[in-house]
Amino acid sequence: MLTLAIIKPDAVRAGKAGKILTHLESAGFKIRAARLVQLTTGQAEAFYEVHRERPFYRPLVAFMTSGPALALALERDDAVARLREVIGATDPAEAKPGTVRQLYAESKERNAIHASDSTDTAAREIAFFFPGRELHELA
Image (cartoon, rainbow, N blue to C red):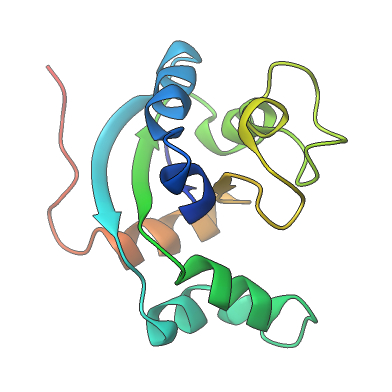
C-alpha cells in the first residue's frame, strides 16, 4: 500500500529532511518516489482545496509556498495508518515521544511533515505530485 508524505518547508529549511527520511525508513517505509518541489500559490491552493473554508487555509498556503518541500510516495503494509502513527499528532506538544513531529516540528503550524489521511486521499495526493509512471519498484 502507498501513501504520501511531504517534508514541509520548515523541516527542509532546518536541515531535518535526512533525519526524517531515516526515521521513516526505520519504521519500515520504502521510498517509491521523491521530489523536491517549490509549490506555487496555485499548486498549494489546489493541493489544500479541501481546507479552503477553514481559517488556517491562507496561512497554510503561504507556509507551503515559503520554500522547498520534499514530496514522498511511501510504501509498506497499512501505510496510511502506520505513517500517521509514526508522525504523531499535528501539535508536537501533543505528539507521542519518538514521533516525527515530537522530534522535529517547530509548532502546530510548522509541524515538519504532511501525511495522507485515507487511502483515497493518498491516491489523489500521490497523483498530484507524481503523475504518470514515476513510482519505482524496488528489487
